Image (cartoon, rainbow, N blue to C red):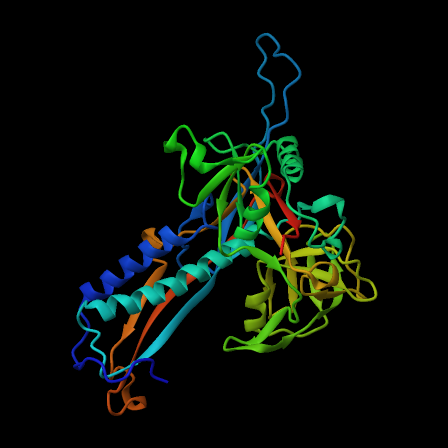
Length: 409
């Protein structure tokens, strides 16, 4: 259905290359400036001709405790690394316009439509990066709770919880950023609770205003916090995957397991999946349930519809069995919403860049009449944004901690 009606007159001429370039530059600029969760990522260019991107996690050298012998060259240590792969997925959105909307000149309406598309791209990319950053297995439940299912609204984020997370990162040899702090994200509800603490240092009180970064709100417990209006909130969910891209009301509520190979971290499913479902399952966290489930969290690196398998990033604490099912992540006690804050150091997570040689993100404008016989009167055209391949993920799970908690009403 057309979004606009009775607007400017259009012609059948081709679009100017400069118009498309203008919109692509505007799109990229908007996304870079507005996204919060893409901060501090190790970025890789879009790989050409490949569906997966490779990241490397280096294993630190062991300490040398023996002195050198005179005139003797000892055996050197071997460089060790773990290859991590991220599955690229395309994303995009579009709208339809009529032949009475002039898309061939850069007027106010043209820019406004591009801004709406840019906003769609921004929230999509920000949410994808958020979900990836909140998929680690290093979890800290507030107020001493042992699982998300026990979290209530009174189990709030506190100075003590932040200190505990910093202690964990320090013990794991995570490195603070060049500004001397670990970084973290909080939403307005968490900010409301946390800023009541006497240890909170508000950004407005900084002596050196040059310390201030975009979206920064303050410091507490050796952590610099940034505000996000798109927090990770765990709610009661129904499906592990949806059936169609244009239908979020039907889907698969659980996946049955046929077998699990602990060596390759591969789950063979008893439930058949198609290619679209496999795309949804990759780079996401799930819970385990069923008669053999114990409610633990698992992270699916990628899914393969051809072999009906899931490939896990990390080994589950308890081996999966044929009586285990894979279900959506749960909410808190009595289905209370559970908020998440991630606190992390350098080299914690990575992703695929939007610009650069890969030319990943683009604006696509199809003028009226470009659909051939499907548009016999040259009445309909479309404007869209598309990212050829996006992927975000955690590289060093020990360098980040996710705190799960409740918030004040």
